[in-house]
Image: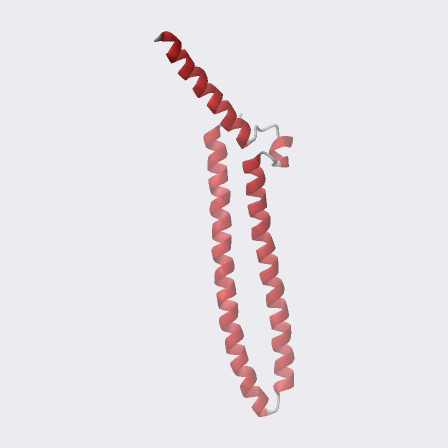
Length: 125
């Protein structure tokens, strides 16, 4: 049976992964904006050279795929935070199926144990 410390470590690891994913997402968004700005400058040049239509089509296709990638990454981050929230609320279905106690159950058990020992100490005084 996992202990509270193990559950907390798993939760910390999951949170750390989510924060890393957010950093990665923020970097990807920043880099995408830089690339988009660079491409916009190139589009301006190409328009003056007479090939603007083809460049604009390429930029639009790139922008659409970039937006899709950002949306997918954002959904992934939100999904991971939802999973962490489920763990914290004791609604993690995978843990329930595996017979693992939920975090709220573990906290409740710990409080009961602490109360039991503190009550024992009070009785002996």
